Image (cartoon, rainbow, N blue to C red):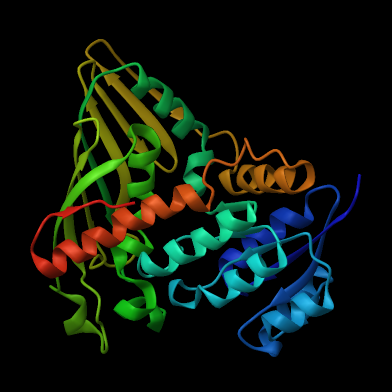
Length: 325
């Protein structure tokens, strides 16, 4: 088995999660780490026996990489992807893929022109409960869905700025939007209301909304609502989505699926780590060219991004937005 040389761009927690999973895989060498500073990258690289770089171009010119993982904040996308696309290097990029839909649309065109292999980190798709839920929903008539991402505000400064994170619905709640699309198909229209209630009084320089609710109409006629907040203290909160059908309820969160019918309640858990399954699918595609195990490539993730950004446009204008992929 040929040893694959992998690079990682970013030195945060997600980068380390992927690095730990990669070094546990057979035939993988974590060859290079690139960070926002040479010091940060060398500190992380030392732990994995890799080489640290403070500049993406320097890393790509010095190393012969088979694939790259991109784990950077939402506002940092663009130039990184363009350099990888130009060199034809497959990449797995963490969500969200930007703070708007214009940049991802441009990158998608470049990716498609090169027929480049990509994967996007919507890791919940790789949970066994998600696959089971998708199958069960395909056999039932779904009427509506209610989703939520309720929690606290991350402490990093960029997250609190609209031009840094894109806001909670784009940066966090995108996972719930993606699960809705994964299970039920495309969104046709959104109408959103956002507000600032608490966090701008507790912290300086908070530019993002801290409460929001979004109504979505799907192409198949299903009506959905996804709400979020980041005002909650400590570890208070929850995230997930519930589907309501003619046969009962399917209530999903990242740790389990609960199926409720008039005569029975059945609960399913996830036996595998979705981050590991996600990486295995991507690495197998890099090695073999078979991308069938990748459950979210850039083209698919772009559609989730369009919906999430349309919600922001609706909240800003006060008008419903028709989805244009």
